[in-house]
Image (cartoon, rainbow, N blue to C red):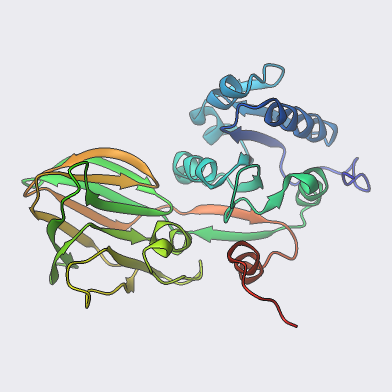
Length: 298
């Protein structure tokens, strides 16, 4: 049941944006249910424009990300981790806090179950929540010192082989110091948030979100002694393509495009992080136990 004890109290967040990617009838009803509940608590509610179009929600005012960044005090993301990643990239510079409701599959970042959605959001409106800042990556592609592309990523940046399926070769420098020349299927640069994503499936370490570091995780290296390492998140990491006929750059699972010999990818800590709100009693390690099926205490 939703929290009604403080229904007449002033909410901790007045203007709230709803964001998601799902286009099923169930997701549309979830948006309507959440919107009605927030309005009953005295909140102004809008829905991100593409979310409204894909879900068919038409009875809530639609707004683009620029308006949400300017006006919203909180963004509620209803979906999976992909929806959370997209929202985080779009709202990082505005510092709009994010809270995630799991309407996807695994949900490392969307930690509120849809069955407890109204009750938990009600407690957050009452000011009962935990705040956590997550680091983002700034990524820039360069050719002969000229910038050709830049973006941010919450999870990871990946340089990997393309459709031809051949190994690529590249050099890695950290703060201008040569680290290694690597032949592999690619390299993942992961934040602590991204350490439980693609990096984990490539035998990378799990890094607690508060740790100020990035994980460099080779993908199927030719030399097996090339192991994952963790470096300071104040490092500037430069990957330069040495030999390749087909390489690509991805960020948070999104494809930027092809990379070519001599092209570099420079990765550093972004000037802004994302602010996550968690429900009362949130535990990162309890989340890992649940999602990764670790055994509990007997």
